[in-house]
Image (cartoon, rainbow, N blue to C red; front, side, top):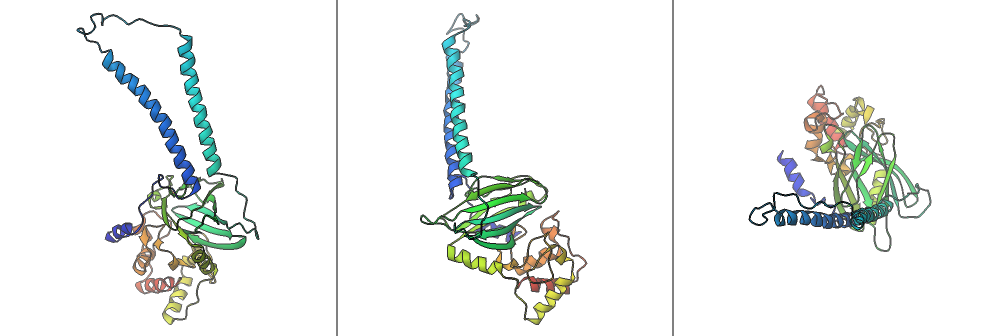
Length: 344
Ligand code: CUA
């Protein structure tokens, strides 16, 4: 447990929508402040009038000897009725316009990836799954990519001269989820049978955290999001690494580990590029150790946690779809861990 707490201290805790680093984030916070200001002024006027009336016209015999009588009843005043109909209509109309503009800015129509178009844009298809994120890298700056990774999204850092937008196409493999990294933009629901899109672009490198924002089952709270914004050269290097197949082991212990791995049912769900492990139901393990975390961002990715996870995933994440391998002997467990730990 202390490992978890230490880990939480290592990561940036800023998940505030009021500190955006991307155009959609800025649009949303501007709209939020405007709407808050308008409704705040209305609340002040209404509550002010209410409190003033309560205090000023209280029923006290001393102040108003006629307080037991009803006050004068006024019926039908055209100016007043026109005023209280027109003012709210005007306010609602202004709010609709502002919200429509924000919607337009945060969800423009996104042209699909096109090979050879040098637009500095990254195209990724996101699949929400119980309870992790799959990222299919479609293409970047006109180049087709075609690799798959999980839970940690790497994107390029843009600059004033060269924006590098990220276009996400979001789909669900099972139930409703919602992709939300507050500093990059608004929530986008991930819904079975429907394809949604969103975009962001940032000139600030670093790690941005988020969280699935739609209840999706027992481990909804542990479906964390991590977006790494890398300088363009680091990002290009990361892409090159991810495109490769898994390294072929040379060490005898690791070769033995790979052979054990390939004989277990791991291969039905997981993929390791360049081997017979071709499952596409669970996270792609080709470059497992290039990721900082396991189990959708909840524990650090190191040898001990990896072994604990393989031994009994449901102890770490109760209800998760990966079965525990309780029947697997300690020796096999060590061997598989040894192999997976080399997949950089
Ligand atoms: Cu996925 Cu909540």
